[in-house]
Length: 73
Image (tube, rainbow, N blue to C red; front, side, top):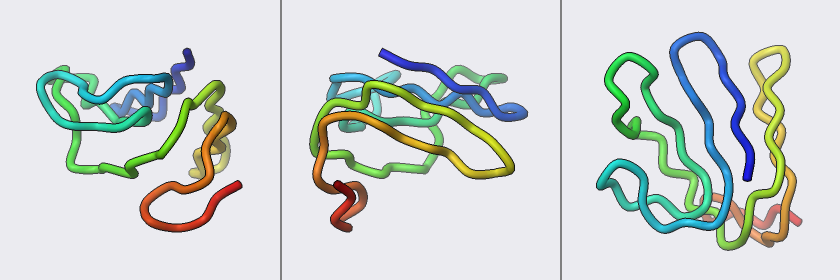
């Protein structure tokens, strides 16, 4: 549902369970040079509807209650 780009990294959010053959739940980072998922695996437990990257911070909005085993309402 959403894409945000920072330098050589493409952040994608939506409703999915894999990206480029790597297991990723709803949120992933892709290396722009290789097209492969990076090691970053935040494991969001629900839909990601919007992403914005500003001042080295990725802001995430959607329908989820946790990201990376942390409560994030």
